[in-house]
Image (cartoon, rainbow, N blue to C red; front, side):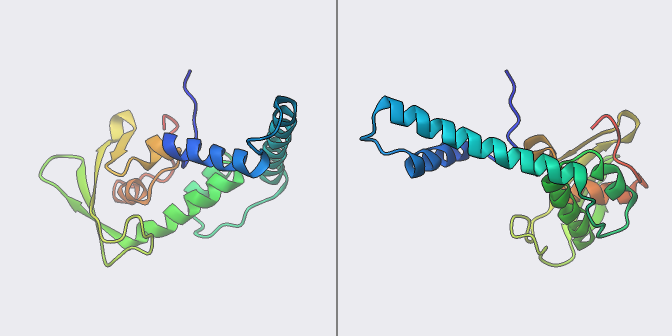
Length: 168
């Protein structure tokens, strides 16, 4: 079964869950107490998920850039992921596109150090296949987190792509 855990690696999920268990459960507790505490953890997680879903459905997020993709993604992402997308949309202006010799292969180079510490002054390569609506960045944020990275968004600008392709 495929499970989608945005922004977490396998180790991070395991360590995070262990930390939660240590907070709620004492190793000297009985099995009954463990089950009761585990149910409290589960209820807490479900409550937070319900809150995120409520905020997504009821609240209207503010638009940072006025970009057509913002309006499109507002209806696609939860509020939390939409906010991550907005940050990526903002960071794309920190880069310029250097076309490589190969068609539809681009190096995305920072003008100066990008404000995002994970990117900083690194150059990323994006391979684009506009006819098949396929885009891949060496950062792999979309594959890992389900959010397009600023590098692919920058290539969208170069190729005059105004809306996120529905195949992504």
